[in-house]
Length: 261
Image (cartoon, rainbow, N blue to C red; front, side):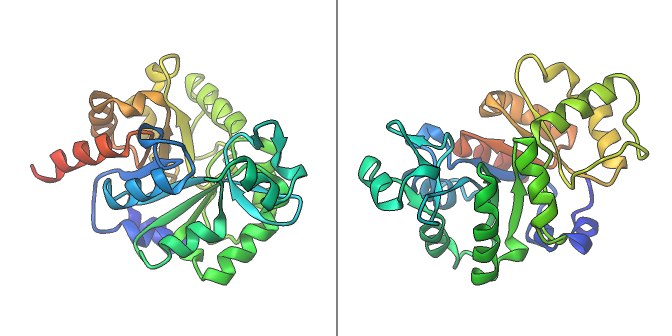
């Protein structure tokens, strides 16, 4: 596993994870097993029951300049970026604002927020929120959409790490298959990612993890397979750095089984 103390010299957020040598526990949208994603129902259980280290949330901007948490950007046929917060919350009473979530969890100083940006127009307001709550050392960024990811690269502080977009992940995987992934590869991101699904599982080997680590970058995994404790154990043994799961409860049990050895 990559040295977190070394990473923390460039990205202060990694100082939150120095007490453990196991992969970092990350809850994907709170964890759909417990209920509706991106709601207090799932966030609270991820934080308090699964003791997650990273809370991953999806961010959009409403037409009246409010930041809300939702994956698809549409609620009962209403597009988030074309409607007001008041209207959207009438459509969905569980719809949260970023401010609500930060107010809820800001006192938990060990908790890190992974802001998955779904809307490029939400980036400036999100950066303002980071400054307001003084959490620059508690944030990681991501955006699966490449244009949004590129905009993040332009606007974010250099001290906040950014995870690769889907297109970049696919190019990295292809470069690895062709033997072209090394320290000379033109990496654009601070965290490399892989969607672990049945059709991508074969590429995840100790050699891939070692190759990525030699470039000085951590490897984050996300995907439906990571709800399975057997797969969780497999990737822990491989030395991956961050595991995003929809079953935070299962991942916590798996990690504890290693910690207790």
